[in-house]
Amino acid sequence: MLKPNPSKVNSRTIVLSVLFAALAIVVALISLSVGTTKLPVSDVVEVLLGGGRRGTRLVVLELRLPRVATGLLVGIAFAVSGALLQTLSRNALASPDIVGVNSGASAGAVAVIVLAGTGGGNISGVAAKVGIPLAAVLGGLLATLIVGALSIQRGVVDAGRVVLIGVGIAAAANSLVAWLLVIGDVNDAGRAAAWLAGSLNARAWSDAVPVLLAVVLLVPVAMMFNRDLSALVLGDDVASSLGVRVARVRLALLIIATVLAAMATAGAGPIAFVALVAPQIAQRLTRMERPPLLTTAMLGALFVVLADLVARNGLQWLQVGPYELPVGVVTAAAGAPYLLHLIGRQQKGR
Amino acid sequence: MHVENLTLAYGADAPVVTGLTLEVPTGQLTAVVGPNGSGKSTLLRGMSRLLTPQTGQVLLDGKDIHKLPARELARKLGVLPQGPVTPEGITAAELVSRGRHPHRGLFGRLTAEDDAAIDEALAAVELTELRERSVDQLSGGQRQRVWIAMVLAQGTQHLLLDEPTTYLDLAHAVDVMNVVHAAATTGRTVVTVLHDLTLAAQYADNLVVMGEGRIAAQGRPVDVLTEELLDDVFGLQATVVEVGGAPVVVPDRRLAG
Image 1 (cartoon, rainbow over the protein chains, first blue to last red):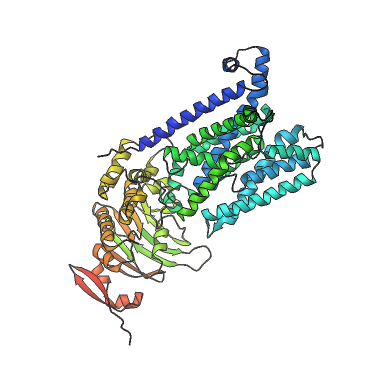
Image 2: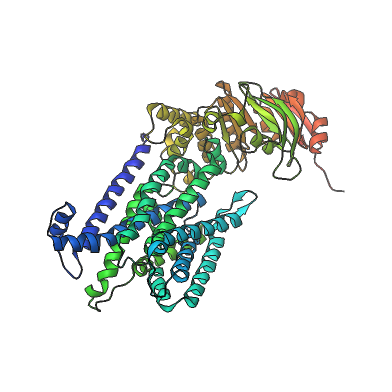
C-alpha cells in the first residue's frame, strides 16, 4: 500500500527552490562579468567576497551589482505578488500585470516623473527617491481597491470578475499614462517611456532600496500565511470553518501583493509576465494545487536576471548590433505565448 | 449545542430564520429537513460562524461561538459547507490533511498525531486505498467522502454538514450516510441538512423539520414524519409507511384528468 506522504510534496518545493536560487546566482554572476569591460567570473566572486582591485570593484559593485540586485529583487517581488493574487482569486490569470496593479503603479510613478519633472528629463531629490515608489504604491493600491470593490457580488469577491474588471482598470490606467506622456515635457516623457518598457538599465543602489525593503519585510510575512493559503484554496467557507479569519487574511495578503508589485514597478518599471508566469510554472513543477511561494520567488528572480542578461547582450550575441533591449521586452516575448496558452486552457476548462 | 432565539438574514434582506430555538441532542445524529427556501442551510450557516446572527446566540458547551477565538472554535466544531472547492490535482490524503489546520502551528510538518488523525479519517470513509489518488479523478460519492474525511480529521466533537448527499445517486448517498451515521455513533454530535426525507428518516436519531424559517416539528422520525406534517409543511400529498421502524415517504401520484 502507498504510504502517506505529504512531506514528499514539501521536499519537491525545497529542491526546486534551491535549484532556482542556485541558477539565479549563476546567471547573476555571469551578468556581473559581461559588459563593456569583460571580467572573469573568478574576479567577480573575488570582489563580492571583499577583495579585488579598485577598478574591478567599481565596475562590479557600483555599476553592475545595483542592476543585478534590482533584477533579482523585482523578480522575487513580482513573482510572489502574482502567486498571492492568483491564489486569493483562484484564477491563474489574476496577476498584478494583468489585473491593473502594475498599471496603477505605473500611472502613479509616471505622474511623479512627468508632473514633478524639471523638464531636464531627470527628476531629482525627494521627488525621485520617495516620490516614485510612494506614488507607485498609492496607484497600485487604488487600482486594487477599485478592482476589489467592483468584483464584489453579494459580499464575495467573484474570481471571474476580478480578471475582467482588472483588465478594464489596467486599460484605464494605461490611457492615463498615455495622457501624462502627451502633456509632459518631452525629456520627462522620454524618460518615463523608457521606464515603462520595464528596464533595469542604469539602476543605482537607490533604485534597489525600496524593493529591497518590500521584499525583506513583506515576503516573510506572506510566508507566514502559507498554511492559511492552503486552507483558502478549498473555498472561503471551508477555510473559515478551519479557523482562518478569511476577511482579515485576504485583506492582509491583498495589500502585501499590491505593495510588492508596486515597489517592483517603481524599481524597474512594469516588467510584464513575471508575476503571471513564474507562479504557474512553479506550481506545475512542484505539482502543488497552488503556487508555492518560495519556489515561485526563486523562479521569479531567475526569470528576471536571465531576461536581463539576454536583454543586455542578446542582440550582440546575434551580431545584430550593440543595442540593448529593455528587460520587459524579453520577459514579454517569453511570457506572451504562455498567456495565450493559459487563456486557451481556461476556455477549454469551462 | 444549543441555539437560542436565532434570527438570520443575508444583508438587509428579510430574515430567513426567525427567532429559532433548538437544543441539539449530544452524541446523536440530527437531520434538518424542510422545503426549499425554508432556511435549513441558512440555519446551519448560522450555527457555524459562516453567518453572523442578527439576534440570538449559538452556545457550544455553554459558550457563544461568536466569542470563541476562530482556531479554538475550529477545534470544537467541524463544518462541511455546500460547494467546497476541490483544487485541481490535489490528492485525497493531501485534502484530508487540510483538516488538521486548526491544530497546526505556522510552520513545520505534520506531527505523528496529525498523521494518525488523517489515517483514521480516511479509514472511516473507506478510502485508505485511494489516498494517493487525485480527488478530481474520484467518483462523486468518493469525492464527498473525502470531504467528510477532511472534516473528521479536524477531530471535533461537533459536526455540521450541509446537504452531503446532493447530486449523488442513491447508492452513493447511502455510502455517505453510513459514514455520517458512524461519525455520530462514535460519540460525536452531528447535524446534517438533508433534502431526502426517507434517507433522513432512516438515519437520523432526531429529525428537525423546518418551514418558513421556523421549526415546524422536532423529534424521533417515526413521531415527526406524518402525513399531516408533509401536507402542512411541504404541501405534499403522500402516504407514510413504516419499514424497519423508520417512516418511508411515498408521494401520491397526481394523475391528470
